[in-house]
Image (cartoon, rainbow, N blue to C red; front, top):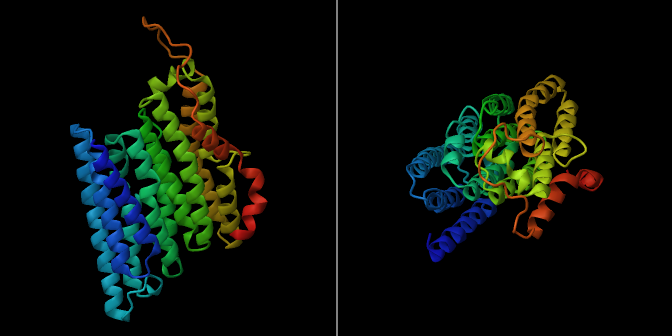
Length: 346
């Protein structure tokens, strides 16, 4: 892609996100979401592969439908209450439509089917963008409207997301699809706590983005699109393979890694809200995700490929270690001890 064009699309992405997260008026928030959608479409379809064009088309259709629903819900609310302010979303039907629209934008179950397909048709770097930066504006809108959202609907969608994210990721062999189902599962954890502790949901999103960025950049460095490629990566980049294995376990939420912190705090908050049964259910369902994270970790660092190859294996890489990767890996693994600093802010 032309560097000037890429620069324009990147600036548009930043502009769309900034407009949405800083607006109080629904029309401005909607405009920011539209700018984001239009800016990311060329990045998805830049390879001109039929799979990439299909992914861009699916993404456009889903996001257009979700944007139309956002506009419809805000207009319905303005019709009944005379308010265009984002924090004044009080009409119950409008809240219901808005929750559905944002679930479609995020890829929450049962509106999640587009997300793995779009991620599979994109490159790893575009997939990283779709999994983190593109989720930030809808998450922000959920945060701003959290007092008026329907808790029962969100909890139902959250449990469904964790179930589907774990269950459908079990038999995948493509790393991008596995990370897509991982994203759906993590979104379930964010959605379940949004009404009760919005700051905690936002913190969960930040930590999820940090760990996902580490995984995507590691896979991009190894050029690993399938599990079979991942099996031979340890010969080329042993240190990165070890860091990737630990980051995957952190994404799974195992102590004493960073990923354990949001899960622990969410279960604690749900218990305080007298939702111990819900907390137990979502914790047990996350074991499904743990299985495919463990399988990825096993493929990355523990197994040898089950076949012999005639080609020579490269026993050392010529690349120098990226300092950003080292920083991201460290933060993805070692933020749990500073949790006493984080707790007072939530």
